[in-house]
Length: 242
Image 1 (cartoon, rainbow, N blue to C red):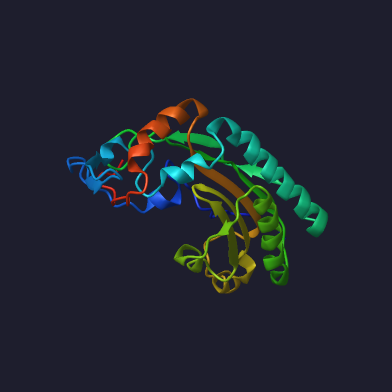
Image 2: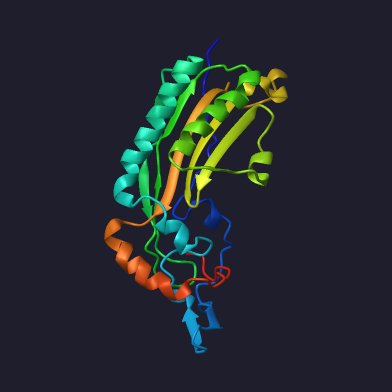
């Protein structure tokens, strides 16, 4: 029986999953401003066109992440550690690489201004293997434990994952705008496939996918300078689609 693997990862381009939900808005919409009172009682107004991150991404979340210069080595080390552990504990081996890794610099900040953010998506690492369903949670938990050693400690639980079919399970772990996904799937469990009604080829396997939205170390001082006036202020909704 020929086994193929077709992946359905969470692809994050330019601003991670948070900004993917931004509605396309008119480029003519003026940038929002926020007026507040500082500790000395002075009235201060900030214009979000100057915000150095992006709508939906707190600057503080960005500053806690690895700099862009560290990312590729970090992603490679994490993926190899997961692969080695899954081979040792579950006999999962013979990984292949699909697609390509890449960098996607931000152009705008969602308020008509310039963002200093850049996003990295790893290549998709996959393996053709049939894993018993009763082991799926254990495999995902193993990946979770490794991700936590890289301080990627939060686990996503939202409607995005509820939309996956019963023959697919996703573990998505994140820290701010950094994430690591493991997907286990077996299309032979798909009723449409079993009934011969599915156009999809047979899918059975595991996939790994890493992504992060961060800044270059060379931009860090400028990022902090631009972000400081916005500390403690509630972020408005995006006003542009960039």
